[in-house]
Amino acid sequence: MGFVFAQSRRKITIETAARIAQSVPHIGKAGVFVNQPLAEVREIADYCGLNYVQLHGDESPEYCQAVGVPVIKGFSVGPDFGKASTVLYNVEYFLLDSLVAGKSGGTGISFDWCRSREVAGELTKPFLVAGGLTPDNVAEAIRVLTPDGVDVSGGVETGGEKDVEKIRLFIDAARKAEESGRFAK
Image: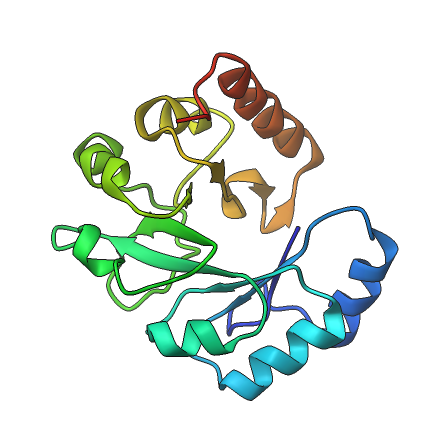
């Protein structure tokens, strides 16, 4: 379960996130941040009981190491993206997202999975895929990239609100791909 603490239309208050997090102790929780002060990230992670911190900005490898909670480091996949972009990061997961000028994820736009397949296969850490995933295309993303997981937000919304039916369809499609052996590398 993800909580957005970065400036976004999806931003949640710390108090609301903590209340929700406490109500579902058996579910893993990640907080999404973009270029926020390290002390703020650490404080929110502690207060909300986050299992992961997902960083989508220009955070350095040193910043990631200092968070104190396992890190999911987001990378924008564009023409210049390659294994070299990631090698200095000792994090739990990489997250591959689309490159959109002036944006740090959450755009609802997919990147070219076929062009990224070779780079994804060379990554030194487990990776997740995000960017424009929907119930209709998540299985294809899994088939092409064989990620260790997927990340979705806008792809399961209707009118800016989470849509229970789209969430169900998304999970079903991802599970079917997983059952076909498409998740494990």
